[in-house]
Each structure stands twice: as structure tokens, then as C-alpha cells.
Length: 334
Ligand code: NAD
Ligand code: DAU
Image (tube, rainbow, N blue to C red; front, side, top):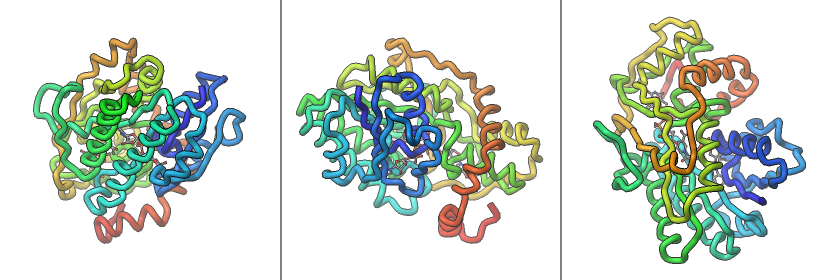
């Protein structure tokens, strides 16, 4: 198979490319990535130069770049997006542009080239918050942030292209991923790297918001299963089955880094902050998928990975990163 991965220099996309290269020695993978602040070729340092891998720097909003990259491929898997909720609250424009308009360009390309499969990597955030129980794929979309609204918009577009043009498209909606190579603006890598440096851990609000955590390699396996066995026109939820409050996550990180609780700093809450995410993944299991990683062990491995890979995150937490935090929070200590 010839696959086009978009956004493959980010967190999940780079782990997915590594998964494919290891599992399918006869596949060829092209990675089209704009290399925004979140894209990082260091994420694929071990893959660069591999004979079955080609990197192209380009924007999914650029129809010509997409057409060139998509020519002759069997499938497109779209990871490319603006992904950080806090950034979307400050500056939503690039989210609408990449997540909605970029998806439209990709769908047009699938249509024009007769590509046999399109996977839209979406998120459980499109359903919004749920007090009790879990969302199924039939639940209404109720996004809370400009990020999740732009992802919901792209899901709607994908659905419409399937219905109107019979495009062979499938949507995956996963819960919160964690693992190696995650940009340290997100809760787990931010708190691990801050703790390693004895810096404060800014916990939003009361810290009792709940997320369902999935180890990134489980999500990669699930997307692989959907790519090969999923049904066109369908949506598949991909959950971890590990609901934890942010306080619980913070306590694990402090325990594993051996740092004191007084690093925790309660800061003002995120605007429109979703209280709890929970999805029902039983439909995915009908395709034969099973989560393989234990949450506790994966968290311990993840803390160890950041401890052993300072070369990676110190470069990332550089001037650009600090500029964002200064703009978002003023003078901060973390
Ligand atoms: P990320 O922010 O780490 O990476 C995004 C990648 O997309 C970067 O490499 C970036 O350079 C690239 N990109 C951004 N705009 C682009 C454009 N216009 N053209 C080409 N490339 C562009 O994101 P991630 O956490 O790896 O998320 C990947 C996908 O998975 C996203 O679609 C996200 O919505 C979805 N998702 C993420 C999570 C999570 O917990 N991280 C959970 C569910 C779904
Ligand atoms: O649910 C899937 C989504 O998970 C993905 O679609 C998004 O791309 C991804 O960013 C993530 O969104 P969240 O908003 O849930 O993740 P984040 O890591 O930003 O925050 C997780 C929780 O931790 C949330 O309740 C906010 C809180 N938080 C986050 C940060 C960055 C803090 O308390 N302090 C922080 O500094």
C-alpha cells in the first residue's frame, strides 16, 4: 500500500508512522506536514532516510501541494490539525483554516484522484462534556471550544462527502492520548517536564475535570485496525477506559518524578472548560481491537521517556514556547 499521512510530524502522526514502518515493511509512507510550532522532524529522527518513507513539507490548505502528494496513493490518513484548546481560545483563526478548510482540500483531492480510503482522525471533544454515562457514535455533537468546533465542522464535511459523493471516508474519535513526543503544552508532558525542572504545575480550576486517557500506541493500533477493517461512512470511538481527574494525573507524575506536592499551583480555570469526557468504544471492538497497554505502566514508561529524552523536550520548550506562555498568562514561573 502507498499511504499519505498528513500531520505526521506531530505527536500521534509520528508515532503512527513508526508503527506502520515497523509493522508493514512493504508499505510506502509519504508524510505531508507544514511543520507548524507543533511539527517536529526530531519526532521521526529514527525514520528519516528510511527507503519506505518520504517527507514533504507542505500545507493541507494548499490544493496543489496536496494533489502532488496524493497522486498514486491508496489511502490518506489525516492527522494534520491545530490541536491545543488553550491556543484555540486565544486565536481561533488557524483552527478554522486548517481543521475545516484543510479537510475540505483533502476531501476534494480524494474525490479527484479516486483514492480508495480516507481516514479523518478526530476527537471525543466533538461530543462535548458528559456528567455521567458515555457518548456513542450516535450522540449529538456539542463542541465547547473553537478547537472542538473546528473538528466537529470537519467531521460534518467528511460525512457529507461520504453521503453525497460516496467518498470512502471513515472518522475516528479518540480520547486523550499520552506518550512519547507529545508537545509539552498538553497536560501530561507539561507537568512531567515542569516537575523534572522543579517548576510549578498549573492546575486549572479545582483540578477535578475528568479525561479518559489512552496510550498513544493503542490509538495507533486502533487507527490501523480502522484503516484495514473499518466500514466506509462509519465513525469509530477510540477510548482508553482510563478515566482520571487531573489531580489524579498530577499525583502520579509527582510520585514518578519524586517531587513534592507543593509544586502544584491552582490557577484560574480554562474558559468553557469541559468537565468530563467519556466515550463508549464497543463498536471498535467489533472490528477485533483490544487495548493492550495498562494505564499505570504506560504512565511510568512515559515519565521515564521524558526523563531520558531531555534532548527532545528542551529544544521544544525554547523561545517560541515561552513566547506563547508569556502572551497567554503574562509573566509566569513555569
Ligand atoms: P500535534 O499538534 O502534535 O500535531 C499536529 C501536526 O499537524 C503537526 O505536525 C503540525 O505541523 C501539522 N499541521 C498543522 N497544520 C497543518 C497544515 N495546515 N498542513 C499540514 N500539516 C499541518 O497533534 P496531535 O496531538 O498529534 O493530534 C493529531 C490529530 O489527532 C489531530 O487531528 C487531533 O485533533 C487528533 N486528536 C488528538 C488527540 C490528543 O490527545 N493529542 C486526541 C484525539 C484526537
Ligand atoms: O480529548 C481529546 C483531546 O485531548 C484532543 O482532541 C486535543 O487535541 C488534546 O489537546 C486534548 O484536549 P484537552 O483539553 O483535554 O487536553 P489538555 O492536555 O490541554 O488538558 C487536559 C486537562 O488538563 C484539561 O482538563 C485541562 C487541564 N490542564 C491542562 C493544561 C495544559 C491543566 O489543568 N493545566 C494545564 O496547564
